[in-house]
Amino acid sequence: MELEYPWLKSYPKFVSQTIDESKYSSLIDILERAVIKYSTLPAIENMGKSISYKELNDYSDAFAWWLQNKTNLKQGDRVAIQLPNIIQFPVAVFGILKAGMIVVNVNPLYTPDEMKHQFKDLDVKALLILENFALNLQKILDETPIETVIIASIGDMLGTIKGAITNFVIRKIKKMVPSYSLPKSIPFYKTIQNHNKPGGMNYKLSDVAFLQYTGGTTGVPKGVTLTHGNICANMAQVDAWVGSLFTLGKEVVITALPMYHIFSLTANCILSIHLGAKNKLITNPRDMKAFLKELKNEKFSFITGVNTLYNLMMNHPDFKTVDFSGLKLALAGGMALQDVVAKRWEEITGKPIIEAYGLSETSPGASVNPIDGTHRIGTIGLPLSSTVFKFFDDNGHEVPFGEPGEIAIKGPQVMPGYWQRPDETAKVFNGEYFLTGDIGVMDKDGFTRIIDRKKEMVVVSGFNVFPNEIEKIIAEHPGVLEVGVRGVPDAKTTEAVSAFIVKKDPNLTEEDIREFCKEKLTPYKVPKHIQFRDELPKSNVGKILRRLLV
Image 1 (cartoon, rainbow, N blue to C red):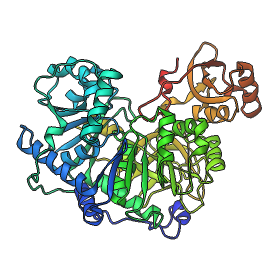
Image 2: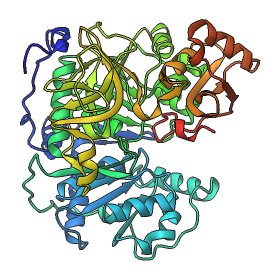
Image 3: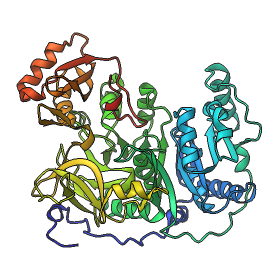
Image 4: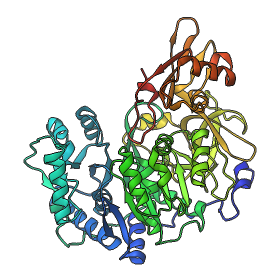
């Protein structure tokens, strides 16, 4: 990689400019290495129950054998997982991969219509689904290609007594499992009762491992094809970036973001295994009191989150009781990290939040701030090792570093394309470079600042206004808890800026916000419309969905 790339001079001394893309031969290789080194150590913990690395390996072997021998599935078939953060999730992921099949991650909160579309589009042949959502499957199963249905229960892997009590409470007391009828389904626990090894598979880095469903940069829902090589390369890039920060076999990882999302899938599910860490799964982080209680129970060293999660954590009264003395890395991604959130976190915990950037199409890591104290708040850091950023204008021409343009990425973590959609794939590549749909600008030291999503830019009387900028300013007001900004049609100015706010201070008024913005923004950027809401629509990881702000 040429030394002319400006970001290379800002790399910490211990970070290599390139990685060995063949460091791991497959995702199974990553697990097998961990089992050899950390066999008896706890791998996954959930609701007070943990399983060791050997148990994770044995359970995933059993599930893989069952898929190969007790179903009509064959190598390369798509097997969907529709689960929250519970122990069954990583067991199923590695079981499916060991069977030579492809993991399709599905949001458990999808509506029946959303489920049907994804299952048909990706030709899903088998589904592991939590019983809480089985009624939704019942409504559309006959309209899908699914032949095998496996039903998981929250208590499946919590032990005989605790599991039975948990399931009873969820089903009978809390009534969280609507009645359903799927007569040909099989309980998950029955699929892992054997002690057989799956048939030998020759895994190649080019083999597809995951299909992550996304709207991508064009807005058309489709499956992002991620190979073993893509994810393994991202692991090698993380290795290079963190250096000796983590002690193998000694760390505790907090997983509050859902693992069916690419950020948590890679940064938590896969990385924790690679580190020989204990991965502490948080099934329902929306129950903030219970979530913070989990954090108080144990010294943890690594946590991932999005801006909204970190913000909500700090605004809960129990946050101050959490011990952050063992924290080595708090990583933010998934949406822009607001300066006010980053600064407040560091003031309270004494530790910075390191902002990273990526997409489903990049496995997801593409850039990250340095961990040696040279991170820059308000930026997404530097391109990872073996990764190149370019910036293009609307006509596909490269703009010079230092000028705004659409971020384009080349690297071994970039997807080969969308599943069976060459038309959509062609739209998002400029030569070897993946077009992200994000407008950014890189400074002379190689740090990139995201301006905003290309499609969410608001045009006010011919002037470009980016929602990120307005949101960051409004978030600095002490009376604001959360804010989302979007453009709305306007007869005089084509579009106008509209701000949707959740109050922290109940006495906050529209005029307070307007005056605050007038001090910090040029007039055409000041929101014309200000509306207060009890809550804002969010994605599965807590990202505010601007398109749903009404």
